[in-house]
Length: 165
Ligand code: RBF
Image 1 (spheres, rainbow, N blue to C red):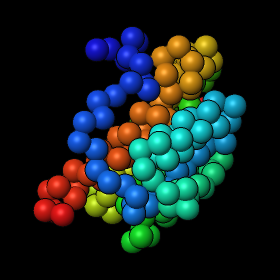
Image 2 (image 1 turned 90 degrees about the vertical axis):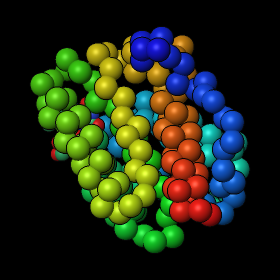
Image 3 (image 1 turned 180 degrees about the vertical axis):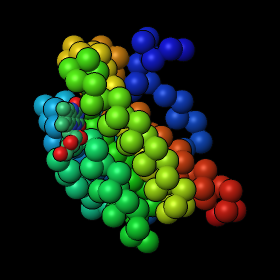
Image 4 (image 1 turned 45 degrees about the vertical axis):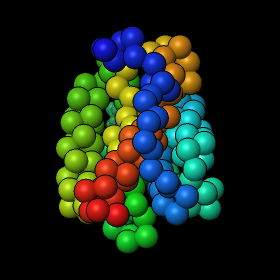
């Protein structure tokens, strides 16, 4: 299924792990904050809906998506945090800057995920325009924040499964 027609809030929830004792951090870019707040609400609510305790969900803001990597790294370094979700919106076409930001954040998040040996989820929308962003932040195509949270839950479960826990 291409991302053009995928509903980001519809997922397979078979065999999800117990996350009642897992701790999550959500890093939110303030750039395009009318959209990133919706992504945050989706991610937060999805974690709670699938069993996370509200007290086990931390939040940190960064100015723009470029800073997501370092913000996420600081959370990922904490031993008590099981997974980090990075949320941002970089609108293509407004500036060439988007290519540099998207590439840097995707690469950065991959690196810190490996370095800290825990899931750090790329919840960054890269739409062509604001309408496409709205559609994926609780609109026609669901919410990227929901999808990012579900990805975090599944990766936390996989880590425990592989560790034999
Ligand atoms: N940050 C975003 O999260 N989304 C954007 O669409 C975005 N566009 C930017 C465009 C330009 C020309 C610049 C200079 C920055 C942009 N940023 C954006 C902010 C960037 O992630 C970072 O916060 C700043 O570059 C730090 O000064």
